Image (cartoon, rainbow, N blue to C red; front, side, top):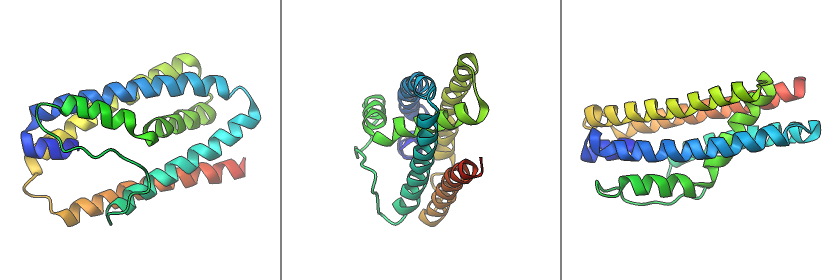
Length: 181
């Protein structure tokens, strides 16, 4: 959506969308971090959370790949972006996507378990996640503005498949590491 907004309306028109997504991500990351750190005090819950987190990552990656073929099994809200409501649409889309909190919860759960993070380390890591969201979505907007006329649908589809495969590989790595430990 950020790429398309920048392609259709320019970089500065896409920035409110980037900000909205980062704000919702910060909200969900905070909720996930607070919940994950308390829930994971129980060893049994920790193991179940790790398996569920890996499963969510695999499903998220699979949905990205299948989206290339027009198949989406994760619900989403589809709104046509305009320059006047991109911020609001970014809020609504990110808040209404059920995979967002599950994704961030999965990422934080895995990091807490694997790295045995303290609350301070979790706060720093979470700040880095939000900063990365701002940075990378801003770069997507720049690329959307510059490269919009040069990227064919086939190349875009190939890039989406690569991203989906990387997320699936991360999820599988979590499951394999879980079994080995």
